[in-house]
Amino acid sequence: MHALNNLAWLLATCPVTEIQDPGRALNLAGRAVVLAPQLPFVQDTYAEALFANHRVAEAVSAARKALELARHRQDYYQNQVLRFQEYL
Image: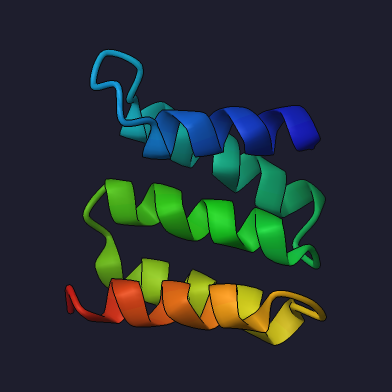
């Protein structure tokens, strides 16, 4: 699950255009969510992958789920929700 999540994050957020692969990131992040839906960082990666694929409403939903699950770093997860909402 960690490998899926970490690779998905890299493919969704890497500033190097040649490394970015939003479709693959979404596939990997979706698989990680199936394995560990209760982990906020997995939901956060899924939200980033959705966002990278221009699925903004779904990204907001996943980011809210991450915020609900978070026991730490609530400010980070709240900022993610707000960042994605700006594009609705």
